[in-house]
Length: 218
Ligand code: GRF
Image (tube, rainbow, N blue to C red):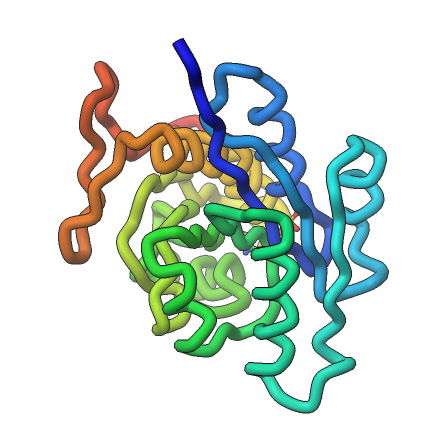
């Protein structure tokens, strides 16, 4: 049976640990996506070195080199098209995207956010969760919509907030789950198991149709 893997680009700005989890998942030849490109807007992004070491194509498009957001994004778009990219994964990509760019990738761009959306959009999610005294926190993979940290949710994982947690301890507990749910979400989307229906993503055609992971022990 012929099987064509979707060509995926991962956009990063720094460490790239989520990128790495996607690269590792896509090593399996049965995984429905191949990581065809890692693109960064920051030359010193640690993740770029890892990708190069894996023999993955990389591109650097520095936002600093452009006078406005859209010309930066048009340069990224040209690179994505040159590599024949079919789906984009944002993974710690620290630039706000314009509605123009988001529209180019409607239904074809995922993001990972370190909180249970729609709670704690934006930055410093772990500090804010601790300050609020919530008992449950987590991570979300969602399709990107023009509004920041919003869009149909594909997978979420929940972790407990424990007495004595610092933002660093909580971040590490959440990050471990991010590394599980991003590959799962990419597999569901590129494998054709998801259908967007307004705000809801239906997972269909899989025995295990659950798109939520609850991790009581963190
Ligand atoms: C992650 O916590 C991700 O959820 C957020 O930015 C962080 C990136 O970490 N969007 P890494 O670069 O993937 O290690």
